[in-house]
Image 1 (cartoon, rainbow, N blue to C red):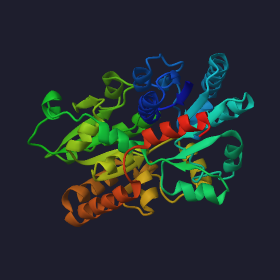
Image 2: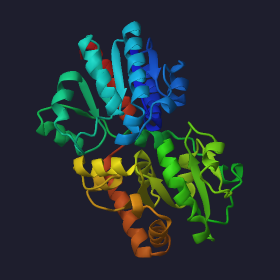
Image 3: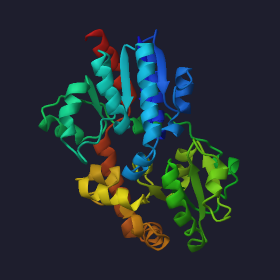
Image 4: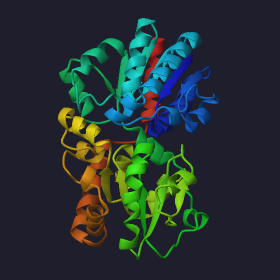
Length: 372
C-alpha cells in the first residue's frame, strides 16, 4: 500500500514518524510519501515534499500575513497527491491546512484518515458536519472527544494518546547532565518557549528575566529542531543559558519545574510529572479574536483533560516574568501547591490510559483499507 502522510508541525512530525514505523510492521510492502519533518523523513526514508519549518503559522493574524505561502503549500501538496495516487491519505492534526486536503482528496476518491482529530470542540463546532462528509475515519487521542463526536452522530475511533508512546519508547540518556555540561548540584528549571518563531520571539525574552530571580537553580532551554542556537541567541539578551536540542524529555526528566508555551508540550510535561507554569503570547488581534470564538475554559491540554485549572495559565500581559516567577516560587517552595499538582498528574495518568496509540492507528488503517 502507498501511504501519504501530512504533518505541519513538530509534534505531528513525531507522531507521524511513530505511525510510519507501526505501519511498516503491519504492511511489509508499505511505501510512503510525506509532508513533515526530520523524524518522518528518517522513518520513511523519503525527503519531505515540504518541511514542517516551512508550514507552521500560529494565530489568525499570522496566518493571514503568510496566506500566500499557505496557499502555495496547499497547491504543491494537492498536485503531489494527484501525481502519487496514494491508497490512503493520513492527515495528522494541523486542521486549517489538512481539512482542505481532506476535502480535495475526497473529491478524487482517495481514502482519508485523520489522526489527532481537529479540535472542533474548542471553537466552530459546526465544522463536525463537514468533517463527517470528507473524512472516512477519524482517530481521537483525548478521552472526552469520543462523547463530543457521538453527540453529532459521528462514529470515531479512540486510540489513546501518542505522547504516551513517545515517552515510553524514548531512549533516555544516562549521562544527560554531563554531556550538556550541566551541574549535578543545582536543580533545573526547564524553559520550553515553543516550536514556532512567533512563540519563541515573544516568550523567550520574558523567560530570560527569570534567571536572576532563582540563583540557586540552573535554567535550560529546550530547543526546537527547526531552529539553531543562533536563532535563540537573538532573544536571550546575551545571557549564557544552555540550549539542548532533541533532548526535551531528558531535560524534563531532570527538571524540578518548567515554564512551558501552551501546546502539546504542556501535556508532555505533565505526563513526565514536572510541575509547570503555562504561558502564551500572540498578536493581540489574534488573541482578541480567539477569546471571542473559542468556547473552552482553558488553553492547556492538561487543564482541559482534567477539567480544572491544575496548572497556572498566564496569557498575554499576564505572561510576564513577575507573575511567572510567583507561580514558579510556589511550585518549588510551597509543599501544598507542589503536592496538589503532582497528585493531579496521577489522575491525568489514569485518564490517559496506556501507550500503544501508533500501533492501534496502524492496525485500524490497514484493516479499513483491507475492508476488515
